[in-house]
Image 1 (cartoon, rainbow, N blue to C red):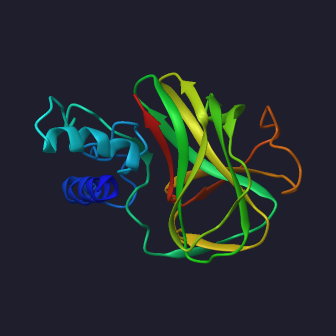
Image 2 (cartoon, rainbow, N blue to C red):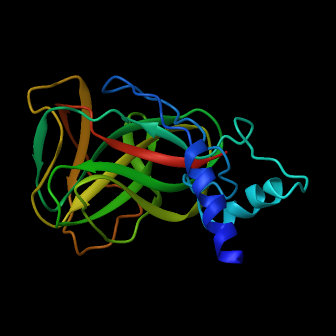
Length: 218
């Protein structure tokens, strides 16, 4: 009977989850909250179901929405229609702005080819250049489509940052090779080497927006 209650609670919670509002490619947007997401995971989990279960049996309980801001996503959230091949052994990315202090919990990306390995990193900005490492992810396997790679909860201050990624093999990603509207910064980095604590020598090219995002909670 207890298992049935959990299944019932999760089923209802999944129906009230909100989806992010579509944006034009290149927009920097906040994701909509997920109603009932008490642990700020960005989705409905078993740990959230107890609140709805209490409400279902008449006990005092709140399902926070929209008071609970949930997970906020900064970066290019709308999938870029063109594709580009990202070479291996380059730590490469673009700038993102975080307008308020928050706790970073993960990176988001979109891939059109699965199987290679990837590592993400967030760097501070110094006069328009990536500078100091804030947090890096563990090595993950690239999945087809949208993907989230979590990191240890890391406090960050408001400001500009650089979302960087390095791949173990050439990987097809959303990107427009004909675009020149976005500064892309990069450096050579062997995939098996540790992420540099300071970015080091920076190369720049006029490139495309990238489907990289930062996931935070307030």
